[in-house]
Length: 206
Image: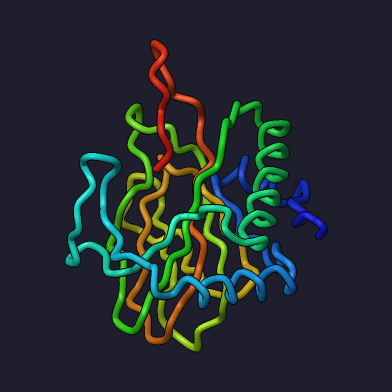
């Protein structure tokens, strides 16, 4: 499989605006394998929580999607992770970020599911540097990703789910939300992270 081409145009967009929207980033064959993987594990999706580790809790007034964290149990997952590894290398070469690893999960939004405004990282309190969203199908309507301007209630961009589309943005910089879905929406949410391990204590993913 050929890794998606994150060209200088998209790197320039990230440097200039803090985000990039890459059409046809993931080829059709891998998208088909990933969506088939979602169908395979459908019984194992769990109601998504908010927060991390011991602070995680379920709050359906904030989000209603279901998730499944990658466990490398399929070739599709392994290939996708290799693709993200290649992108991580590009980001590190382009911006000297010292990105250390990547974590991700499938996200399933059924009719009426949403995720209200939130940040994926808080300044000084997280090692998530870049958020990625890869869409695996193209719903007829609903489930749009809304990214807000930094420190503002004004909308920066509204992104309609489209199979193969990859969105990347700075985790600390942009508040965002997922509007209610009208059709089933499958995606992969992921995060490039820095290593925040200190004093011999390993900083865990998720």
